[in-house]
Each structure stands twice: as structure tokens, then as C-alpha cells.
Image: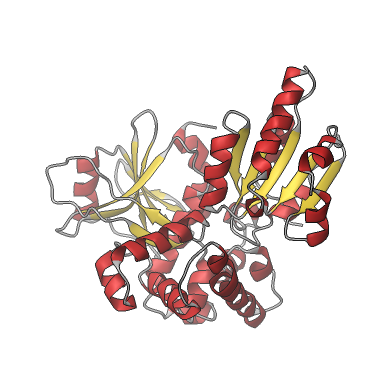
Length: 393
């Protein structure tokens, strides 16, 4: 079993907070992580997609109340939102009685319905954590491991597959299950062909600024519907939208977000990329590497840090702008080369952003300064130093 970075944090939350929701895309390892926890008390696991487990909680208050001394894991909780008021009642009853708080670990595929329902009924009693696919920092520090992670993505079954063909088959099946089964369950009244075209279109525009009207015209639907579908994909942790930097800088800025498929393996399946050699010669290579690095970086950042992209209509741009609560701005440019050049566009943009530190992220190699305030650094080294750079280690 690959050790997950979130294990210690999750265990601490479970020990101190009455209800913890571990959210993330399907098949990222939520159930495996939850069932491996050692919390010093018995654990009872219920899968709310299994009819036998659903039958057990036909009277949820009676059943769950019998296991007050257990950690109760409820998997696929979004399938039974009616349980949230019951959980609230059990937590509050034990608090009023002066007893140890009830402990529930909820696992969900991060649907907006789950987030909305739980926030309405469990406010002040619940804490949220997101489990991403396998991150680079959780894997061995070897170049071939990073290459495989980039090509196959971080879903455990894809990354650990016996060969490239098996990995590609798993990802293709995963996408089919989402498009044909899971998304329609969420109330999307669209054909699987349309949804697949939408997913493919987003993939081929990896890292591009979003143009809703163009996408809507290509798909034959209206812009509001496209926006709704993209919001849903983002809420399911499949797609990431990176907003534009929005302050008044006296320049004509691009004000549309950039959109990325969060998992590089799914991106490559949607664009027909089979292996590393194919990827390195593909026109999407640079944008794929950019999205891969962004995901590894942003998955480590605390909620208090804001992220955006910066681009002017004249073409000056910065891939990632990180702003800390203290007001410090860090400018990050991502390059698929070991010898990046510091261009006037980056210098001008950094000046506009008032960034005192900048980084060029590369696939590897030694770190070295490009100027007094800009450093070239390999992705792994940057991820290792990121907490210290932000001052929260």
C-alpha cells in the first residue's frame, strides 16, 4: 500500500471532530485509506451502494445509535442525504449528555448535492478533507516514476497497472462509467456522446482560457448548459478552473479562467496519447506538463492561499500566481525544458503583480538563479520546499 500524505491529518480530524467528510473523485483510494485508519476504537463500515448495508439502516437512528463507541464509516454518503439530520441529532444528543462526541467518517464523490446538504445540516460539526489521486510526493524519487505518473496519472489502479495498455484500458473504462452511468445519476439530461465530446473538447483545450460561446456552438447547446456541465465536472474533482488575476493593474487583462483536466492520465486518454514517446511528440505536451505541475503544486496549498493566472491581451503571462494571506505574491512559470530563459514578459508581469519571488519549474536538474528574484527549480525540489517558501512549515 502506498502511504498517503493525508493519513496523519485525517486521523487527527477523526479523533477530534464529530463528523469528518473525506471527499474526492471515485477510485482515488478513499475507502482504502478510511478502512486502514487505526483510531483506538472499533470501526463499522457501511457501503451505501450495497443493498444489504442500506437495509441495515432502514431505521438509521436506531442502528447508528447502537454503535456509539464505534467509528462509523458511511461510504457514498451522497446517495442518502436524509442521513445528515440523523447524524446531527446523534452528535448533539451526545454533546448534551456530556459524553464523548459521536464519530462519523463520511466518504463521498464530492457531488455539489453532498456539499450543500451537509453544510446546511451539519454546520459547526463537520470538517472536510479532499483526497486527490496519488501525488508525486507520495511516490519514489526516481525519474522513471515521475514520467509514469505524468503519463498514467495518479489514480492508483491506472498508475499501478501492469503495463501501458492495461493502464489505458482502466482509464477508458473509468471515463465510460462516469459518462454513461454516474453523470446521468446526477440529473444530467444529455446523451453519453455529447458528454464525451464535451470532455474531449476540454481536454484538447488544456490550459486554454475558457470560451463558453465557442464550446457551446461546437456542441450545439447553449452557453449556460456548458457552464453547468463544467461546474459539475469541477465539483466532482475531475476538472480544475484557474481564475484570472483580477486587480486593476491599468492593463488590458484576459479575464477568462483557464480550464484543466486535473488528472494527466485522464487527459491523455481523452486525447489519444498512449505512452511517453507519443506524449513527448504531441502538440499537447507542453500544456499537459503545465497542468500536471499545477495539480501537484495546488493540491499541497492550504485553503488560505489564493491561486490565479495572469495574462494580458498583449501576450505577457504567468502560469500560476500564488498570493499568501500576508499579501506576498509568488509568480510561477512552468517549462518543459532544463534551460528556461527569463523573458521580458515575465519580468513585466512580475512587476505588475508586485511579486518579489519567482520560480521557473522544470522537470528536474539542479536549481540555480536566473536573476536576483527568480530561481529555476525542478518540480520535486519545489514541492519539497513549498511549505517553507510559504512560511507554514
